[in-house]
Image 1 (spheres, helix red, strand yellow):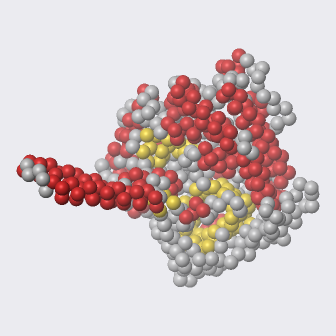
Image 2: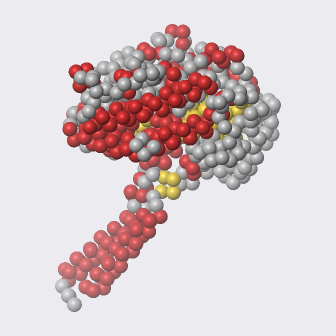
Image 3: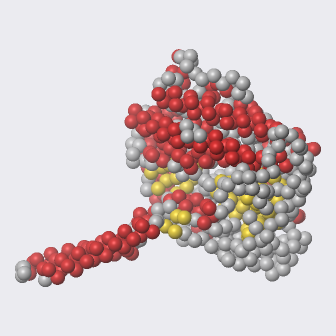
Length: 639
């Protein structure tokens, strides 16, 4: 055996290193495990897209009406919600939206989009881990499919995007209509996609008509170099930007819809920050980012984001952009032609995610996609050049998309992602199967919807147009990638001979910003179901698989579907009580006599989380044990 004294020190050092390495793997959980996406139960429940779910809202009648009468203030009111038979109490609801909210407010309709906050009054309440839920009213979309289809496309291509499903809503037993339930881009979304160590989220918006989150309060705290340890406590009982996004602004004084938030005409500080341009190191230059932060930000967070924007502007892409994620986002985004976005006239409706200095985009709000804001004809839209996606303005002023076309390597990767996705999503027949099954699923609800923004016939025409448009668009994109059709605006201007024809395709039939989707019909409609007309186009009274409709389908004879309440996420029965009691106080909406009955107690939703996979965990344990054994063997051999 070796007896050198110095070698003993070497052996001891080697053992110590191996032990420390094992402890890092075991104790730290493997940092990559903590960063892995979390598995949250709500993803497989409410966002099961094979059925139309039910959301039955119970609220004090007076409070509900007051909320509707002052919808533009976006103020919360207390409610309970029965979701697929499970009741959740002590939660909050408010209207939501930008221009769509003002349009409904100025109409004879109460069909607002809503935001349900499970944790508004009690941070322990959630729907199987979901903290907030958006209920979108399908406005300006005669197809009732645009948002749903775009999110399915994003998820299929592998871009981080919200989950969604269709829901039938009732309010105090009154039928309210078919909505799209969408996962809010907040804590649960971040945890599901990025794990417990998630980064920062921003909702850039210069329209001054609804921020993305709670950044204003965080900015105030930064002035005193203070950041609260618990952000939920910090924001308790404070009005955030989302809750006061319209303030006292009069809609009679607002500019037309198409002029809101245009580049250079935006709200807080112009639009250079929502374009993601670097304009200096001062955080005050980026109010539309930091005032719209979803989570509180520190000075370090601000500096890190500004540094990323600077690198992006300088062309240092690998150091500032999650390139694969952003390429996947823009592959779908540029396919669906949403001008109500980063690439359009109104620079908003996207989320910016930053983690360790790398930026990525998260899709949001696609009800005006597929040319819903365009003045172009069907042929120009079908053949819209994939390498010139900016519809208005200088493309180089939008650095988050410009880099894709400034280097051949990135353009080729972008084309490859598009080509592979079209082959899998369209060429296999998956798109047509998905679209038809979804139309079959929601048709009975659209036909009987008492508050719908379009007629059933308009829905049928719009959904058929959407199908034709997407198939033509996919064919054009394939030809643009192989060079048969020019892929830039300049190329198509020089030679339009190869462009696909779109004869007979009426883009307006899908709905859009130029019409309010049949709002005039609302005066004649009542909030109850009518017997469906016996026409050849009427949907079948059976499910696609040939079985009888389940209890979640609306009753053709009227009224709310009868449901048997199940246990809630915390394993205890949760049922709404009388809805005729006296209104609760604003401070304690669940006091005795409140809308949820005597002695009502807040439901305590749980947030079960699984990080990483079981295989990864066993590999870590095995690796740690092996390191320990090697260290012990090394020490014994050389002692």
